[in-house]
Image (cartoon, rainbow, N blue to C red):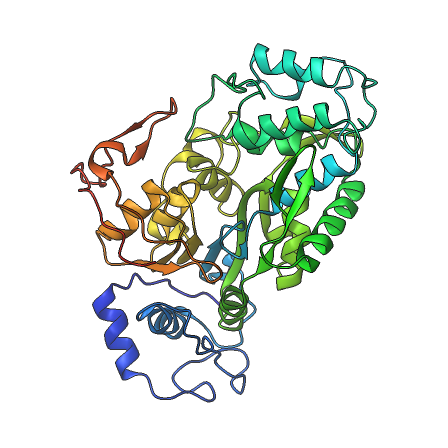
Length: 421
């Protein structure tokens, strides 16, 4: 069955919601299972303002009750970032810290740290070589006991700098790749994907079992040691699927890791997009799988590229361009600047969890077309920001600096106050 996706503005959504009866079955909608319940979001005070009502109205307007949604047959697409969107905290961090704590990161097989990332600076490569000097090439390093090596790895990953403050990465397009995120996946080289799945499962179990607010010792430092699924986002995913949406994940964490976590929400492996590396037989390598013909990961423009390639079959540099409305997601959810491009592509509603990230909050609060929803984080929400300098520092430039943020029509987005926190 082919469905036609319609654009809806705020006024149309409100009118649609007002006209809807109280639904217990499938009145007003048709689909392959007429007696299936038309699910709506559970009542929850954590939803801000009319966000829940507007999402329910979208479900009623675009969904097909009980349908097994697939974009191949015209189902509306819903895209979710993972870290700090579907869960509180970061599964990439959780897995990286577990690998370091358990001595599961292998030294470069060729003995050259520069081969682990094309963007690693000579200073960082030298610092890693010195700190991890006792490591045997290609073998797991004893970072469970060697705190010097562990600290250097953690510093490069978390701060993009050496322990002495030297920049760790250079020469990259800051709108298409975050080298530290990519490096976390590249450092999984030498293991089979099945090995990595087991490591991710172990890290997941630890972080879910740890109390909220827990920290863990990694090297000589203390780092976040817990993760939680947001119940409200679990409910949202399940409601979208019940209404025939094709639900997928687009994450800057390593794809095998994101697949482990997504299974809990019933999202199949082939609906999870993350950082990919090439294989040597069945063994992971440090070679990043490109997108749009260049080195790019699911990060800002790289998220659009990956969705356009994998979901809509666009190849080459055209994958970085915004597609026609009929080939874009209806709904998208994210929390950070890394999500701003794929969020902007959504044609019906775009949900942002407020983590005080400048570019995405500037776009969301400007709300030029009325389709943006802002919600506080569902666990431990951020305090009110002092405001966002959108007109001068709202846009992340390819070179890594910031500049004025422009709307699609070229006008400058004015500075914004933080209103939802």
